[in-house]
Length: 378
Ligand code: FE2
Image (cartoon, rainbow, N blue to C red; front, side, top):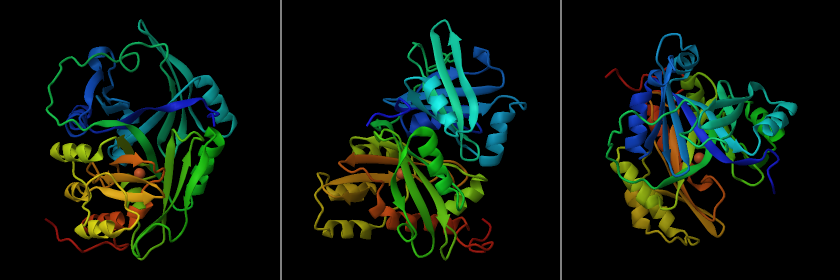
């Protein structure tokens, strides 16, 4: 079914961070992205520095402030730590997409406008998402240089040795919101963007006996854009979503899933590049091997060796793995996913996954609701 907004797919994701230069190095080294663009004082922008990183369909921007009056970026990183400020969808017409969204109740951040230089122009507009995040509509059909006007090639090409991760593009982007906000944001996507609710995880569907969450997945009708939204649900201990909201100081993007067509190779390379993943117990693979509906082409020993999760969905399945939070706060993380005829998000893996997250939450002293005395000072 054609998309009412003329959405072609994901475009870029921009992170606001403490140090763009050092984060760009991490993205290049750990994820094996290429630093293809730069914007900063040398290019005439005085208050901030941005690096543009790419690989196949992945386009990430990392931005940090270059002086104290860059309040927009400082304000974000002071409150949230490093995190996703905006994610963009490529559209046929920025004007049409923005008009549809705002006429249906979207909160405007930036009206359609052109960024222009001698290489052409880029059109974009933005609406509000969650507390402090933006969704950008962008069209770069009339621009034939690096990313957007203002970007140039990095002044120095630094060779950063990294194993080839084979990452392809964004599969889905997940938001965490407060209790009772999930329906509000799901409706916001459905009304303003012409999305539909694809999956609705109800109380009891997701969680251990200690911590739980509710989740709805909204997506474009052609399924190019998939946006799960989580909210905490009552449990004996603190939900991982509650921990995120506390540590991020608000609602925002929890994780980005990146797809690959050879997850065993990708995870081996990502581990070699230094990425830390959630730990999956060996018993998970003993249980998996016993399943009668297991019909996968991968060697289960390879999955076990690299700690990759497998969820069977009818005649298809998906393989996935989650990193630990990549920054200093237990907030944003990445997921890597290979879909083999499965459209879901790994519901069958939630139990093992959450038990692993709860172990880390406990170590941080964030699993109990009361101030924890679990860990003595180092
Ligand atoms: Fe995910």
